Amino acid sequence: MTVMRDTVVKALAKIQVQSNEKGLIPEYEVLVNLLPVSLLNAFSERIMAAAPPERKAEVEAGLVRAAYECGYHTGCGIITSDIFSEVVMPMVTEDEKDILRGAFAAFTAWGWAKSGIVQLKEAEKMIVRAFDYYEADSGGQGLRGFMLRGLCQAFFDLAYAEPYPDGMDTYVCHQTKGIEVGDAYGEFVVVKK
Amino acid sequence: MALKLEFTMDNTTNRHSLNGHGVVMHSHHYLALITKLVEDLGDIGGPQILCDVVEESMREIFDDYFRENSLTSAQDRCRAGEEYFSTFGLGKMHITGDERGGEVRLSSSHVDEGWTRKWGAHGKPINHLTCGFISAIFSAAFNKPPKSYATTETASMVTGEPESTFVVTAL
Image 1: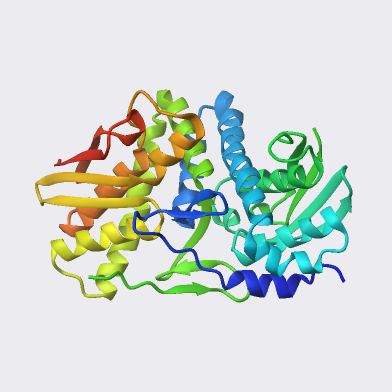
Image 2 (image 1 turned 180 degrees about the horizontal axis):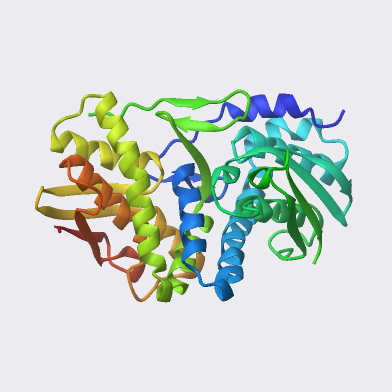
């Protein structure tokens, strides 16, 4: 058996995070927050618009980096969590491949992106397609999947780089297509740095 | 007063909403790095951009919630704002004041604790996100247009204080 995506999505989508008496959400070895997507998109666009042309790459890199570190640390917490062990691990027969499949099912279930792996060359290359993602609504010009770029890179690092926490920045992700620029889906290609 | 929370999920896209507004989970690593990014972009107004965006986005959410739940008193509206802050996992907020302004304390703070976990203490306050959140609560609670209040962080847990404090002034 390999990971049955629909089963995982259904099981994980039911999970709701809840704050404790301090108004904090400690889950997956991190503090989780829940923020309006309108806020996140507006922030990305406003900060990109404010940057002069020679600094736009720096701002873009900063947005991707925030998602990457979030994905790397939180991702490790997710794939070692009780719920992942309970829902995904019993279906894992192909090690890293199946863990990645489970991780992208979690992406979908938790509303980051309705996405999945379409090509995987172990430890070398991964192509992910996303048919819905909130950054596609940001209204900016050009490719806007900053968060997804960071998350795809993070999960490939977790799967194939040195074990956590020593595998950071082994791979890099480029966005090659985007719903926000008129394509039918967003496409994200992860390769060795 | 307990905040009414209606979590929903679109079965086609799997996007999640709270009380009709799309929401998504991230971690303290994300907000710490976004805060650091705006600090590094201080010369182009980074902190103020974050503050403004939060005020505008939260104002829309508060206006919808107050209208749909017939919340008319400023006191009830402030309590709802505090509860939204906790529901989002941003910490524990305590508001005092009136339409001329007031003081807001945080007895716990996602942004400050997240920054401290990642990089340790910092020499100055960095909670620009919460400044915008508070300005949105005050303007919505007192039926004022956006940007009617200035919020300044005067004490901060990230600098080692036991609580964070914000002063709110009507403009």
